[in-house]
Amino acid sequence: MTTPDHTDVYFTAEFIDGPLAGSAEERVLVRGTHDEKLSEVALVDGIESIFRYFAVDTREVAGKLHVRYTFNEPASDTYTSEDENE
Image (cartoon, rainbow, N blue to C red; front, side):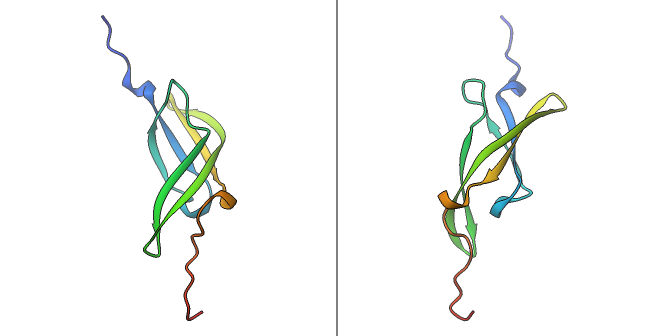
């Protein structure tokens, strides 16, 4: 019996714009494929917000799948602070 190559079950999600621009994370492939849409929870100005992203393209880097995601602002929570003093 052979052991599966566990590097084949992960991919790197790269966020190219929006509040998570420039960040990346390792995610698990589901049924051998990446997510077309992602929902990420993050704190902005101390407020927890849900940000929606969708895949724009894929590429292989050093034998590993990398997927670039773009921000879907209309489907996401507002992430700019609403300071009463401004």
